[in-house]
Length: 218
Ligand code: MD6
Ligand code: FE
Image (cartoon, rainbow, N blue to C red; front, side, top):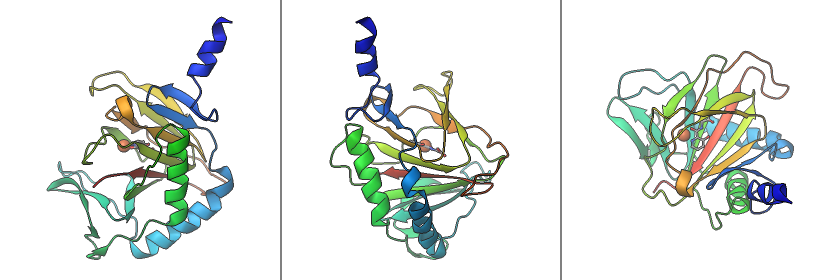
């Protein structure tokens, strides 16, 4: 039947996700069972590397608070966006990436069609109501052949899924607690962002949304 081909095209290689385009798959609620263990892993990271509001090269304080774990951490200041091997606040290496996190990211990447994914950087974003992330490309990594894997926890947020030019009108997508988004291949350099987080109270996270993005940066 005519629609069966379409259903097939919209599934991820392992059938459990929704294919958004050629290189992008959304797995709804994939992390629901592991959410508390993931939050515990984040607490171990933030004890060593607390969340902080970074400053963009243009001098704006970001509304999203960030920290990192893994061999490399993403940061920005007046000098620009980059990855560093140590936390500039403590001058110590970034905390190691908890195995639970790298394993979950690796298996999601595999189910989306990117086997053998070994992220070396995990950026952790914390949103309170009103916090947003303007349209951007993830392009501070060395090699764009590796996908980005993103975990969402807590309050739902509207994700802007754009094109390859900043001016391309983005689609809107709701990212909810437990969702995993994997994107790479031909979609790797799409513009994307997060609309201001609406007020709300999540049973596990309260007035917060946490997003983790895994990359192979070095
Ligand atoms: C966020 N995410 O969801 C921000 N980047 O809070 C990102 O910037 C992002 O979700 C690359 C790939 C997936 C993402
Ligand atoms: Fe991004």
